[in-house]
Image 1 (cartoon, helix red, strand yellow):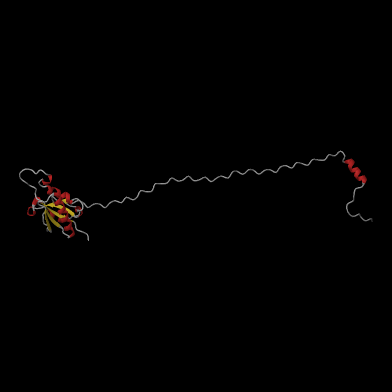
Image 2: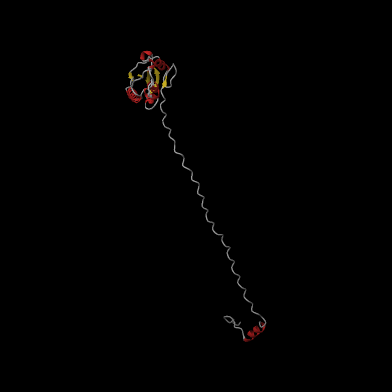
Length: 201
């Protein structure tokens, strides 16, 4: 058996002539045009984060309103047996009857209004500091005879009329609890019992 030749067999001249005659009418196919790669879909533009609308600034709460301490109640003029706030009924009755011991006395006879007011303030403050409870202030009845005075300051009874008002104003109002016209044995209509508040120590 004959051995096979090694390697590929080269075509002969006849084979090449036969191949060319067979391929004479053949046309070379054009290479298919490469289709362009599909472009990637455009990405949507990145959304910018919306800035939050600034919240309206709230007005600061109003500062706490501090209420001033209540002023002391004005002194009560005890004309009859009436109840007085801060004063028990028995003490009120004793004041109206002139039964409380009088611990000090001030006579304003002959004082002008300004001097009388100043003397009254000094007397009441000193009596309160000394711990006194009931004092007597004499103003005079203000009765006069003859022609009426030309100046209002010299009018009769001006000290008597002003005394309750002076005692109802600070700083005396903080010391005085009640006022009562005195009984005849202590000056009658021209004098006043003044009941002082108990001082806290």
